[in-house]
Structures are given as structure tokens and as C-alpha cells.
Image (tube, rainbow, N blue to C red):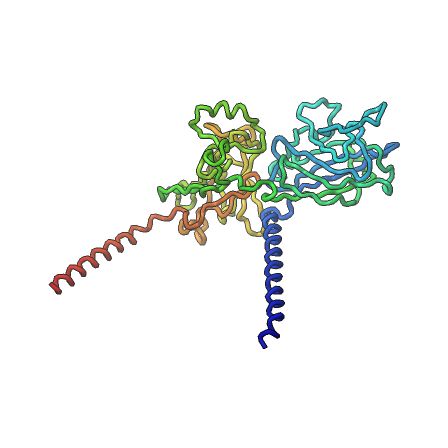
Length: 456
């Protein structure tokens, strides 16, 4: 009977192996999708609206508007760039409020030369100070967009373009495809352009409403895994009741060092520090960090400072270890159960974020305008700090088991690496345990001596 069952056993074995591989593949896919989802801002996205406002003899004029609907993730210098692929043989005749980075091959045009002839143009915002006749509303910010919570008015950017060799009616025009948003590096994935209800525009006197001929919407979502291979920030902890300072976990943002990867970091006491920093571009997307145990561009330190009868106080310090980047309009998002009783934030702006409706345990913090809204590059001035005053809820408040430390911290929308919970500073209540251990040791020694005396 053995040879008869052998083929059946082999088939079952192959089926089991295939099932395991299939489940493994599905698990990997699920993990990626889960990590790309932001539970603190589940509806956050960047929406690109393409409004055709008029037709021309060979195409149309459109206003493209970029809305940053993310609560705490902003687009910093050097700003956004937007790329797409034309569906037909379109060209850009001219632009206002933005410009294509390359003109492309326009040799077949003899009289009027288009602004851009590339099949896949890349458009960037114009810089502040652009002449007024080259501006439109919400343009010319250097591609910098604030987060929606910090400043909704500056979370919008736009440009206008005149498109030729395109359709001239709603039935003949075709939407661009393959949208790619860099802000300023990778991290965003854009969907296809969808036809939506035409946008309506209200005149400044609010007495007339006009509408676009046609409107397309493109939605782009962010994934920290696409943006960078390693984390960009870490968290360290300390408290008044324990002398131990819990540092960022080792290799939080990578284990590169000058020994393994020469030039990957800079020693703060290096005699060549000034020349290295001046030679590098301060707005470069690739960080040049100070050599540390954690190798992170940003460290957030949470210090439990004081304990009052009805309040307790925390000091939060953000330190920049990146020699190439000044972080303007930076922000923190912190999760802690006592944020429902935050009494005062002394040097940071504060806004409650309630991703779970009635649970108020998440706060957004950012710098005060013209005071500490700019986090300078690594060095003596490369830090910002503030203190937070919380009212105690006697039903939940405790310093035991690390309750006073945050559950999660984000810097500029990226999740920071936290120390392991068993490393948190503990309360100084081990004296009784030490006394008991000493007493046990004394009693054991006396018992041993007595036994030796009896058997002597």
C-alpha cells in the first residue's frame, strides 16, 4: 500500500508548500498596506485639482491646484514638484505661477515656441518675489506648503497653464496620466485622474458664481516606507525621580558610521567640520548628520520635570543633528492620555487632534511664529524647547510603569523610534527590595554558619 499512497503524499506536500508561500505573500502585502495607513490622520492626503477654465483654438487653459489636506505633514523646502504623462501629443504654450523644469524638443515649431514640449513634463512652483504679472492666487511659495492644522491658508498651491494640441471639448479632451508628486523626495503615490463635478468659483464681490468647463481630481497618499528606508527621528526619556537618562535606541536611523561608510556622518569636534558643512547644500534632501549612537537627524527628548499637588510638568526638547537642513514650520504629534487635561503649553502652539472621536489623547505642537518656528541646523542653535503643564486626573495619574511618558511621537509626520518600555526610568522604590535582599543574604550567611558549627 505504501507505493500507492506515495503520489498522494507528494501532492499534499506540494499543496501545503504552495499554501504557505501564498499566505506569506499575502501577509507581506498586508503589512505594507497597514504601515502605509496613518491611524492618526486616516483621511489625510494631497488632492490635485485640474480645472479647465476656458477653451482655446487648439486646446484649453487650466488652473491646477494642490491642496495639502494632511493634518500635520507639510511640504518643506525645496518644495514640491509635479510630473505627469500627456495622453496625446499635448504641449504647454505658456504658464503662470509655475514653470516646467525642461523645455524638451520643440524643433518642429517655427514661429511661436511652446514653454514645454516634453511628453512627461515636470512642473515646480515659482519662488517668492516673482513679478506680479507672472503670479496667480496661491502660487510662488517655492513649493512649500504648510500642514492643514498649522496654517490652512498656506496649505494650498496653484499654477496656470495653456495646453495646445489637445481636445477642445469635454468629449475630445483627455486627462493626463501617471501623476508623480515629489515633496520634495519620494513618498507619495498618486491615483488616476477622475472626472468630478466642475469646480465653482465665486467672484470677489460674492455676487456671481462661475464654474469650470471640466474638472479632474487626483489623490496622492503618503507612505513613510516609500519616503526613506530608515526612520528620521528618535525619542529619549528622563525624569526628575530617576538619574537615568534613557537614550535613543542604538542604530534607530541606521548603523552607518565613518568606519563602515566614510563620510556618512560628521564628528562635532572635527577640525574639518566648517568646510564640510559649507561645501554641502543646506537644502539637500539627503541628511548629513552628527555621528551619534542613534544616527538620527532629529531627536525628541521628553523630560518629566516637576510634580505638584494637582499638576505635573514636562519639558520637550527637539534637537537637530542634521548639518544640511533648517526645518521651517516643524511640528510634533504626541500621544499621551493626559492631553485631555493639558493646562498650558509655554513656548509651543497646541492643537488637539482627535482621530478616535471622543478620545482626546493626541496633540499637535509647533513653534511660535518668528520665535521658534525655525529649527536651525545642527550646532549650538539647533534645538527648540518648551514646557507643558498638565492637570492631574486622580483616577488615572501615576508615575509608575512609565505612564508619564508618551506612547508615540511624530516629527513632521514621520513616526519616531521609541525606547523599549522596559528601559523607561523607574520609580525609586527599590530600596525595600534592596533591604530585603540584604536581610536575606545576612540570614542565609547566619544559617550557613550555624549549620557549619553544628556539624563541626
